[in-house]
Every structure is written in C-alpha cells, then in structure tokens.
Image (cartoon, rainbow over all chains, first blue to last red; front, side, top):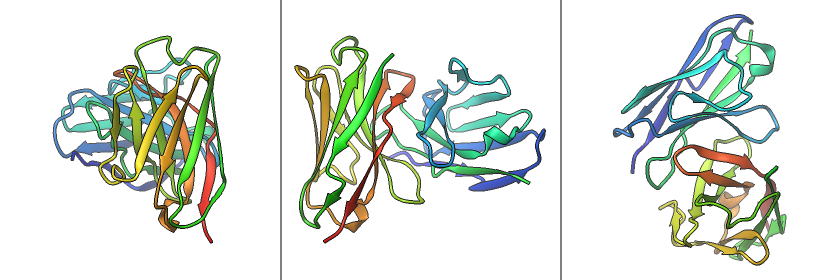
Length: 107
Length: 119
C-alpha cells in the first residue's frame, strides 16, 4: 500500500509568517491529493483537492502544489484562526490513506 | 445543503459489534455518482480511513480492517451504515461519515460520534 508521510509533525510560527507543510507519497499518485484542516475539537474540513484546487470559501492565503510523490501546503500569512492540524490524503485508489498530520501552533 | 449525521451506540463491549448509521439529509443518497465513506480518529491521534461504498454498491475497505468491516447502504432510508465486529479497546475512536466526491476528497463530514469499547 502507498504510504503518506507528512513533515513536520508540528510547527510553531508567528502571526504573519509563511509556513509550508510537506506530504510525500511512497509511490506516485499524480495530483490525486487532498488537504484537510481540523481545528481543535472540530470536524475535518476539506481545503484543497487535486493537489492545488482551493475549495470554495477557503482563504487565498492557503495554496497547494505538487504532483507525483511530493506535495506542499503553504499558508502565506499565518493567522490565529489557522491553528489546527492539517492532513493530506491520497485518493487515486483505495486504500484512501491519510498522512499522519501536522499540528500548527502560534508562537 | 447536504448534511450527514452519525448515530449508534456510544459504548460497545469488547468482542461485540460496533454498529453506526449515517443519515443523509438535504439530498438523495442516489442523486449522483459519488460514494459514501467512514473515517475514524482515536482520541488524540490522526485520521484513519475505514472504507467506502460506491454508487453501484461496491465496497472498498482499509486492508487493516477488512476482515471485520461491513459498509452497507439503505437507499429507501437515505442512509448508510458501518458494522465493525470483534471490537477491542483499540477501536475506541470518534467515527465520522462523509461523502466521498469522485476525484475531489471527502466533503461534507458528519459531526462525528465517539464510540468507546469497554466492559
């Protein structure tokens, strides 16, 4: 099965900082990658599909890129409401594996 | 607006069967070609995909759970269900249902329901 590895597992940054989260697939998955945001105590929310397509209503400071095995989620200017755990997920074929998550905190 | 709501027993004895239902409202479960899925999250841990059922009724399961899982759909009641047998404490988690949009991802999600496995 294809494994999804996220790094870092956690990060702390200041408001306004640019942050990047990486997701690596153990085999190529084309662009069939989604990113989710899970705020503390809340339900996961789909942010990005097809590696780079922002879902409706998602702030433009979020962006995604990549294809094949290496993907990134970038927040261009970190805001307090972005405190959350972010998960990548492949969906090219079953099993639809999630990455282990990246916890983002404010310094 | 499509909404999903999980229901079922919040406490299951070890070795018994966990049964949950996801009620779909705001649209018909038959209305398009997408699939319906279950995900779980143990306390303090990450997300684990359990499986999904397609529009045609085909099912796909996480290999780590495949021998114990059944996902089914009741189109007359606009709902789909999860059965997980022979549960242990390791199956304690918040269980979410979601719509699996083809080539997009999971959206929307239900609110989740905590299932505790304990005697």
